[in-house]
Image (cartoon, rainbow, N blue to C red):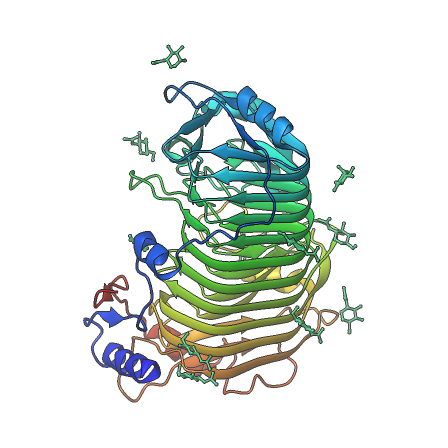
Amino acid sequence: MRSSSILLTVSAVVGAIAHHVELPAGVPRNIDEFRVKHPYKRSEGCGTRPIVKIRASANDTDDVADDFLEGLHKANNGGTLYLPKDDLYVIGKPLDLTFLDDVQIHWDGEVKFTNDTPYWQEHAFAHPFQNSLMFWKWGGRDVRIYGEGVLNGNGQRWWNEFAGLEILDPSNTYLRPILFYGENLTNFAMEGIHQKDSPCWTNFIVASKNVSFTDVMCTAESNNATALPKNSDFFDSLNIEDLTVERVWVNVGDDCFSPKSNATNVHVDTMYCNGTHGQSMGSLGQYSGEMSFVQDVVIENVWLLNGQHGARLKTWAGPDIGYGFIDNVTFRNFWQANNEYSAFIDSCYFNTANSANQINSSTCAEYPSKMNITNILFENFSGYTSGKYGMAVARLTCSTNPDAVCENIEFRNFTVKSPCGDDDDKPVILCDGIKGGIGMDCIPAASDEAKAALKKKCSVPLADIEPPF
Ligand SMILES: *[C@@H]1O[C@H](CO)[C@@H](O)[C@H](O)[C@H]1NC(C)=O
Ligand SMILES: *[C@@H]1O[C@H](CO)[C@@H](O)[C@H](O)[C@H]1NC(C)=O
Ligand SMILES: *[C@@H]1O[C@H](CO)[C@@H](O)[C@H](O)[C@H]1NC(C)=O
Ligand SMILES: *[C@@H]1O[C@H](CO)[C@@H](O)[C@H](O)[C@H]1NC(C)=O
Ligand SMILES: *[C@@H]1O[C@H](CO)[C@@H](O)[C@H](O)[C@H]1NC(C)=O
Ligand SMILES: *[C@@H]1O[C@H](CO)[C@@H](O)[C@H](O)[C@H]1NC(C)=O
Ligand SMILES: *[C@@H]1O[C@H](CO)[C@@H](O)[C@H](O)[C@H]1NC(C)=O
Ligand SMILES: *[C@@H]1O[C@H](CO)[C@@H](O)[C@H](O)[C@H]1NC(C)=O
Ligand SMILES: *[C@@H]1O[C@H](CO)[C@@H](O)[C@H](O)[C@H]1NC(C)=O
Ligand SMILES: *[C@@H]1O[C@H](CO)[C@@H](O)[C@H](O)[C@H]1NC(C)=O
Ligand SMILES: *[C@@H]1O[C@H](CO)[C@@H](O)[C@H](O)[C@H]1NC(C)=O
């Protein structure tokens, strides 16, 4: 029943783009419907843990950072810090929480960072990767954060002040903190929390093992049309092993999910991404001479609406880059509406528009990526694109470097449509530099057929999601 309604929907779009589009039945359209469909039920551990409570903030400027730190010290080694519903905890200074060992935080209240941007720029922790700042650092063993509370990055002022700048511009000096940073975490779980309005990336997890995010909601929504919540990725990592992301709602201004250098054994199941840049591997290979890899990844049951790309692999090209590989990645059961490319291998990163740092196609050809890309499966993709690339619904551009292999890239049951063209126009997939076929027709981007397909641009309205959930 479900599949026939998708097919009807898609043909309606192809025929007449003005029609609004139905999601497959039962897909939540906002965080309230997400909670209805995936209610957060906390699993009770056995035994009782001592409960620690701390003073809540009296108002928006009442900094309880010291109390928060002391509470975690008290709850550490077997206890639970309890933040009750309706209580606010304002954090106005950086916290080093890397001493944790067997601690839980029952988080039903709201933790909110102050928005004193000059203060944080001077005092926040720093990480060299892409010049990151962090409000705090979490680290240690057996750490569980659970509840229906809010972690609020208070990002509006940061976005307003950052407007017009680019994070990857080497001359940018306006740095913004990451909402949740973890380092050297072993056995970490975040469950149920609403992560809200991060100034920059939402989660950054480094050198950690056995990490999970379940039933989490992540939003970054600006009230200022000229100051978007830029770079507010839901998830980034370096050096991570055994990562699970399950049942997560994301509405942010950048990647929905994007592990970076050195990720092994990653499983994502059931994510709703609206307005994002997609499910991305990387970017990888940014730093000169550095080896990096992503391997053994399954990402399944994903709904991506109104964003940039769908499933994406991005590797850097240019004169000063690293090397490495992406191997064994499966993207399965993706439903998409109004995204640019539904599947995209981009071996000429970073090359987006409006950046001082972009590389052009001649530089990419001169200094191609040194990343191998092998054993990538795109399976059961459906829905429709935005029309930005005309009839082209996917693009796979491998490195032209003879030492960078790009093989066993496969499409199975791929039915993504374009909203453009006439009834007899067929969606096309663009492929360059892949060794062997992909299991479907696929044409070089420089061919006449591809150029004609790219020219048939059109647009669709925001995926307005009817009927009611
Ligand atoms: C193939 O795609 C159709 C249309 O999206 C879907 O209904 C069906 O479940 C898919 N089959 C498999 C085996 O993935
Ligand atoms: C906020 O609460 C603190 C602590 O109770 C108090 O000292 C301060 O005056 C309050 N500030 C405002 C603006 O109400
Ligand atoms: C990492 O965490 C472990 C506890 O899980 C601790 O023993 C070790 O000292 C930490 N390492 C660093 C570099 O902080
Ligand atoms: C909105 O953002 C712009 C920067 O693009 C800033 O100049 C303006 O003050 C912001 N508006 C408000 C109401 O904060
Ligand atoms: C991974 O962490 C979870 C808690 O988040 C724990 O229950 C599980 O036992 C850990 N797995 C391993 C292999 O240690
Ligand atoms: C989905 O994303 C679009 C485009 O960014 C935005 O206009 C819309 O409000 C978002 N909807 C929800 C429910 O977050
Ligand atoms: C990734 O792993 C490689 C090989 O072990 C190592 O050389 C590199 O420094 C790691 N990258 C990061 C960002 O730690
Ligand atoms: C590919 O990755 C998946 C997910 O981690 C894993 O289960 C599978 O064994 C890997 N396949 C190979 C050939 O390593
Ligand atoms: C890339 O693949 C080639 C051919 O299999 C291999 O020789 C080379 O070591 C690989 N590079 C990396 C970084 O794995
Ligand atoms: C294929 O994907 C669609 C849409 O995401 C989903 O409804 C369907 O169950 C998937 N098919 C299989 C066989 O998993
Ligand atoms: C591409 O970029 C390089 C380096 O910035 C520049 O020297 C070159 O002129 C550019 N080529 C084109 C065709 O724009």
